[in-house]
Length: 195
Image 1: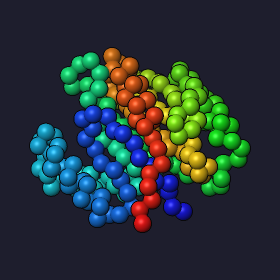
Image 2: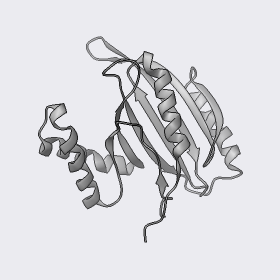
Image 3: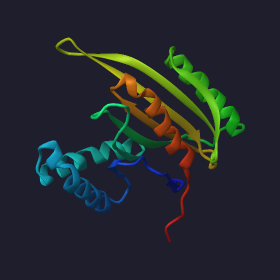
């Protein structure tokens, strides 16, 4: 089944890449990103590009269409990671998209007890928006705070849902994260089909 073409407006300063089914195009995009950011990461273009290409099959398998980073928040160095994926249901979703949104919101609240979850209406249709935060305990007593804004947007095809997630390690950046994520979600629209 062919996925619905989508377009979004990315945040200013976004550095990342779209992921598609054409490996030649993915390779070209990975090298373009690597040329722009490898030096800042202390890697060669070839090494950084190969890291990106190694991630592509996993991203494809998980429906990820765009991923990357951008500056966000009040402090220099606050960076957020944006991921946009499309998940598909095995069958057409029963009922209206509003009913699907209500079910998605209930499910999200069940998995993220402290999240703020609410339905919203975007230009493309109804959606769920959630803001959550938490601490992640890594080996060596390293504790990291993570703030996440997520939109789940059932598409008009009634077979797919867009999952837009923006995550950052800065607690102070949560208003900027929420704002940047909302701007991307509000810009989501159907794209033109390539012929």
